[in-house]
Length: 138
Image (tube, rainbow, N blue to C red):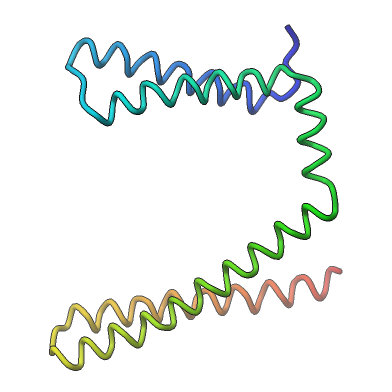
């Protein structure tokens, strides 16, 4: 057995071991719904990741898909659109919490609005500096 993707193989082994540990813990301390769900999901994920780590064709196909220009363009476009949507929602939450704070007089709403505005400012600065970086280096 040869390992072609060590990260997937290690992740699969860890998931499988966590599932086994949860099974043992369930027998020792009792079962609850969270443990049962994780006991089922972790070994399934672990076995599939181990299989993907030792399957040469799957590793080649995944590396090809990761480097294909169309897939990279789709990934970059979706991340960019997701960032725009998050910034828009963040901007709306700023106004919502500031208006709620003004109407109700609760300082907690105002604090939440200021917190969201701080996050919005950080995201704008990061976006601005990353654009400068990529304009210089591309």
